[in-house]
Each structure stands twice: as C-alpha cells, then as structure tokens.
Length: 125
Image (tube, helix red, strand yellow):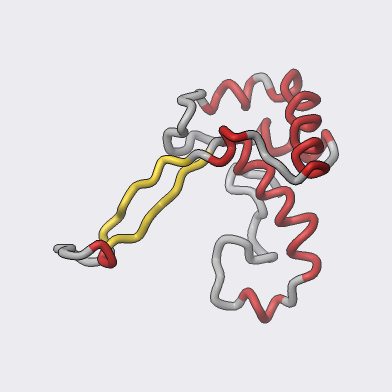
C-alpha cells in the first residue's frame, strides 16, 4: 500500500457514524499529511503479517428492522460500524487486490464493491 493512496482517503474523510473509539472524523481529515506515514506503515504491517490490530476487529452493531413491526431476530438487519482506519484499509485492499481478479458479472447483485463506483466511501477514487 502506498502513502498517496492512504493520504487520498484520509484527506477525503467525511462525517460518518460514530465509531468504537470515538475518534472524530475531522482529526483524520485535517491531519492527513501527518498521519499518512504512520497509517501506511501500520497498514503494510497488517497486510504483511495478516493480523490487523485488535481494535480494527471491534464494531458497533446496530439492528435495523427489515419490516415495520419486527417480532423475531430474523426481522432485523445488522449494521456493523468499524474503525475509520480499518474501513480505509479495507477499501484500498478491495480495490487493489480483489476487484482486479473478480469478473464484473459476479458482482451483479452486489452494491458495496462494484468497480464502477468509488472504491472508498470517504470520497477516494
């Protein structure tokens, strides 16, 4: 992973849902230049060793009803919100290492990682 990819995502961060560590989004956006080398180094270590930091594995899970009056657990859709850094790394990894090897036809029913959309929810392209 290259610093310019990480910088591009960090500097384009937009206000998102709360995250497990309560770090404000603007911290990443306004300190992108200073944080880029550190985030890139941590990201590359994570990819090299195949073990993300334990905080990157935490999430806030919100249950959203699928129907107006849910009565069973299956009537809910879980929405997981992870740390901003883990989301940035995930988006870059998907764009660089997964999408190039997946046939577009296999993504027909998917919306999150379609090649024709921005790969990063934070305004990266």
